[in-house]
Image (tube, rainbow, N blue to C red; front, side):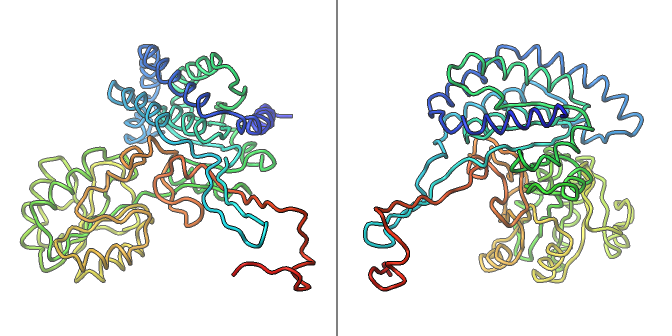
Length: 429
C-alpha cells in the first residue's frame, strides 16, 4: 500500500472524529497556530530563502515563470497576512451543525437541513507556501481533514510551516491526529487522484496545465478554476478619473495573481477621450501593451503586438486592449474569451451596470472597482481555499461556507409512508 493511501485512510478516519470537536477546541487550535507562526517567523523566512535560491536557477532555465517565482517569495507583509488570516478565521462563526432551514412536513414529522463537513479535502498547489496556513485554518474551522500537496519549488518553506502547524496542534487536547497532512512528490499526485474511496474533494491551485491535468485524471469532484482571464470594460459613460487608477491597480498591484486584469475593452465612443492618458499611465508603470489591429495602427509606437489569442492569461505586466462597439459587444467578448473568474464595468450609468452584471457569466461581476478585490480575505471570509468558476456547490472566493455541505435530518414518531399513500395521513401543503 502506498504512503499516500495510508495517509488518505488515516485522514478519512480523522474526518469522523472532527465532528466531535467543539468550537472552542477549533478556535484554541487556530490561535495557537497563529501564535506559533509569529514566534517562528525567522525560521520560515530562512527556509523560504533556501527555496528562492533554488527557484532562481529554475527561473534561469525557464522551468518556472517569473509569476511563479513571485508567488513563492514570503516577506513580512505576507507573513503578517498569514497570521492575521488564521486569527480572522478563528473569529468567524462555526459553520458546522447550523440549521439552514427547517419545517414540519406533516403532523409530528420535522425536517431540518443542517450544515456538515465535506470530509477529506485534497489540495494541490504550486509555489505559494502561504496556502498551507490558509487551507489548514479553513479545514480546522470547517471540521474537514485535509491532504496538502505542495510544489517541490517550495519544499523547504512548506515543510517549515507544516512542522509549526503540527507542533501547535499536538498541544491542543482532544484535537484529532492526522487531520492536517502534507505530501510532496509528483508521483504522489497520481495516487492521490485515484483515492476516491477516501478523498471527497480536490482543490487545485496553480497553472492552467495543472488544473486541466487534475480535472482529466480523477473521479473525485474538482473545485477550482483553470484560468484567471479577467476583463475591465470601459463604458461610454465611464469616469476617466476612476477608470485609469482602477486599471493600473488591477494590472500592476500584483500582476501574477489570478484576479489581475488581462484585457481592457474600450467603448469606441470614449476611445479618444481615455486612450492617450491610459497608454501614458500604463507605460509609466512598465506595462507592455498588446492590442487589436485598430489600435496597433493608431498607436503603433506604444503597442507591442497584435493579439492573436484573446483567451490568454499573462500573469505579468502585459495587458491587451481592444475597441468594442457597445456594451453588448463587450459582454459577448467576455463570455466568449473570459474564464468566468472576475470581470468589471467602469460606468456612471446604472442601467448599463445592471445589464453588464446580469449578462456577464462570471463568478464575480464588478462595477467601478479593481478586479484585485476578488479575494476571500477581502470579502471578509478570513481566507480562501481558492476561487471557483464552477456552477455547483461553491462559486467565487471559497471560504468556510464553501467547505461545508449539508444533510437532511428527519424526525418522526413511528411514521410510515403507507399511511400517506392510503390517505390516512396527509403532508402539509
